[in-house]
Length: 162
Ligand SMILES: Cc1cc2nc3c(=O)[nH]c(=O)nc-3n(C[C@H](O)[C@H](O)[C@H](O)COP(=O)(O)O)c2cc1C
Image (tube, rainbow, N blue to C red):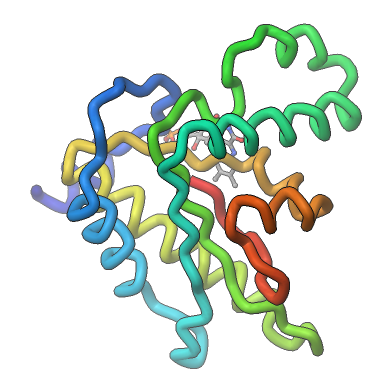
């Protein structure tokens, strides 16, 4: 695909079909991520790929609970029973980085992760896989027990959910 068409064509999509995303497609998307520039060449990311729809639903429900506490005015919108967090997506990718105990690299880790994610959004679009930055899922950073259950183990920080 022409780069301009890709950059201008990609949109955040919030409704997904049941069409499966193949392992090959997921790998192509992740591979695009690791071609992104990274501060000091550290390549700090780890990617957690969740394909189990029950786990994705769990992520959404736990995120909703936190969002409701944070923004009570959104309660009605959130109590619909619909997945207004991950939109019933068949795949959730969590771009993570190793925890930096001395916090020297916190900013770099975030920037590297966002750059990797943008490459993934674009590659997804080229492959016909729609994507969305699921920013609210970041609230789960305050819930390490929930993150652990979905594969973000101790020692890793969640940076970009998509
Ligand atoms: C940091 C960040 C967080 C976002 N979080 C969410 C989110 O939680 N839910 C959502 O539906 N869209 C989210 N988005 C998508 C934006 O709403 C979207 O990119 C913006 O409206 C522009 O639309 P476009 O991506 O189609 O160009 C997020 C985007 C960014 C960059």
